[in-house]
Length: 544
Image 1 (spheres, helix red, strand yellow):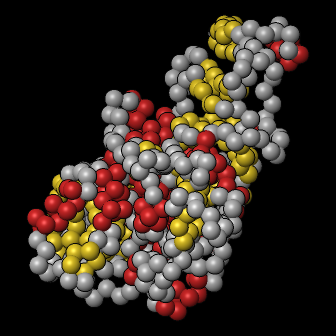
Image 2 (cartoon, one colour):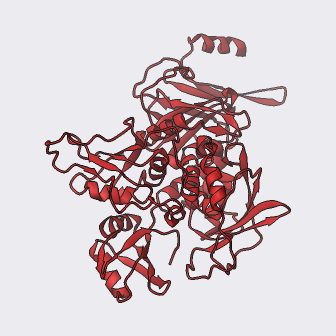
Image 3 (cartoon, rainbow, N blue to C red):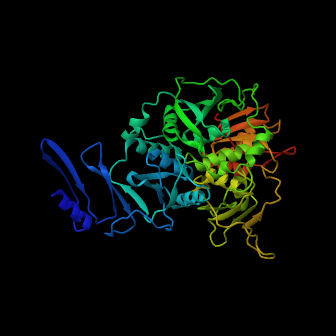
């Protein structure tokens, strides 16, 4: 009987679904069949949580009865659903989710472990395009195995039942962090994984450390999961180790679930993460060995620079740092490496970015130059004449373009969430001589405001994601806290906290939201404070 039904299903003659439990010989056997009236992927294993199978649908906008075949076409139109092939057999859902984290919100995942494939759904088509473009230039790897990523010919990924709890919990936790909120404590799947986080402090061991891993690289990677408060690095048993403290234990658990076992760079620098028995770190010095981001006034102590010029020059010639980033956080790790050691040259892509969903009533070439200038030297900016909510920005090189894209894609600017992707253009063309383009194109090649013109500039060591806290420098001695609070309030927004340090030459200023901080930076970076002092504004990794 069973073989007859199976044969009918195989021939496509049976189109309805049924689920039954048959008893015989004291044993109970569950059979599951699925209608082929939709494009349906069958998960062979029954849900462990009950008697019903887990059913996944891939919808492509119609209700066709064609049998879904695993996609073997090399080219498909852009879609927010991505098809990932050639995965290692032991891969976990969290490792696949990690492939998409740097590019935007990951909204769903479907594993086809028997076929070594997966489908990953991102929040927007633009994020998926950015991810595919990036991994076209940089081969993605999972557990040191190259994998292939392409657009799916389906537009949406739906699940009729929960994924396994671990993967669903990580997916929800990451979504909460990316949206700037906190994980949903009412979600039972999330609770089951995150509720038992014993400490906000993680112990991190780096295996196969062929390249330097600095304190700043760790901060870049782990800050994706919450506020990093303190880091202490040290060597024990000839292994580089670190203690890293989050503001909340739940953030530590999220980071551990997603990052444990991942490689920072291709085939090396593997993260081994566990909870520390400590619940609070005591940091005495802010230097390249330890840092308390809540206390920027701490002395430097006897810390040594993490990279001397010779080491930086050696890394500068090694394209593998950017050429083979692992699934951990491709753009984030590349950003950390590029920002720390000032890598130059080509990273496999042009230096031109396409920025879309701009507020065309507010945006100007100058505001884009200032914001993107935080992550590289913007050379030219062109707001598109026939599509004024989009712009092309030419950075100095591909590394700077990757850096800006990884930090600014998905940020809110003038009330709209902007999308940043790599452009196919190699350069931004200036308007023909004598042609008036209404000031939509600006050439900033010779601007004195470039932050990264000088090799070895400290600005390379202070590249951080947009945050509500801003770092102010070049503050005149006669300017008071009230003066600065008033200045930034006038830019639009609310100043929540303020702190002078370095003898009033520098300050930390916290706005209510990241969007307000972005607005203030665009308006007030290089603001003339008088007495030949121009205010310098950047994003800070510290908190007040």
